[in-house]
Length: 419
Image 1: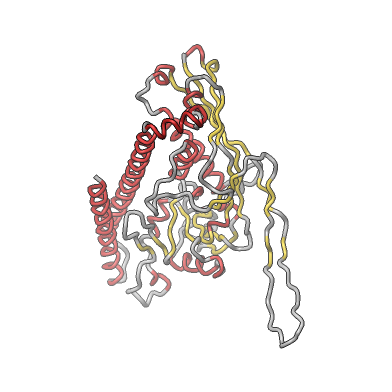
Image 2: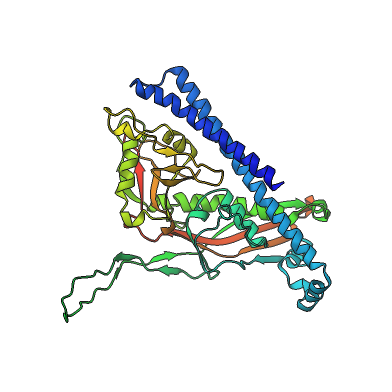
């Protein structure tokens, strides 16, 4: 089964690469003839671009299904281990009621009115919450299932540095404004002192994200329904979408300071093009970020429509005399490999604004310099809130905040021209 899934994914990726090459052929022909695309060529390009987007979605869906299959296998293995005599005796010794799943099922049955999903697999600071690149499933407790659903709806939980903290007190992080400096010292010479300097602290608050959902009592009574998975996925998507939006474009006024909001100016586009960017703009944005921030954690972030525009751009756009330049965009060669722009991954983020006049539509830099403070998930149950409709109400909450800890140029943005 795994071999069939891999073969199918390879086939999808081959189709995607073929679509990409078909797009480049259209652009190559127009480039060789030094002209704009004809109406027919533009339609072909847009159809092929849409085909790539459709294949992207199908590949993502298939990868999600494969990862879910791995979780099911792991859960089945855990179950089989539990029913062996040795493990059964061990479960009696530690008390099955103490396990998280038993606690959550008691919560669903109404035996308890609140439940806190706690992490048990990550350190207090965690960089990467994606499991796709390694193929190794993360332990499938409830906390992890919610986190995975949050990662799936936007990239901020995956690209940022996550600080897990359940305290509601403010968390202060020092912001370094200058490094220590070294100097040449002669033999037996005195070594001078050079300390790093720090600016004002960044304060991460503890803002509450919450929502309620309702299910029928009949659904709760149906043992064939994976209610744990249903609530985990729904909670993750609802909380994840809001967190991704706040971490991207939050205003820093009683909410997160979004990475786009906190980024510094890199390049301003030309006028008269409705805020669109050129190849030269993106190259300039790349080099506006200091070399120190162009490491392994660096990347681009923009929305899908902007990525579609990037697929058309050639490096030769900076020189009308050269019509043989390569494309800035390079597709991922496998299903789990990111597309790249100038050799760095492109993250699709639906909360980055579209190209428009004076709009910050593209960012580039060290995305890990954005810190998200994240607490455990709390769930509460009420049988009384919708008693007349025979509905059980569940409330999901998490406390969080976020800010760019290095605002000296670690992440920079392209902003559209004023007309």
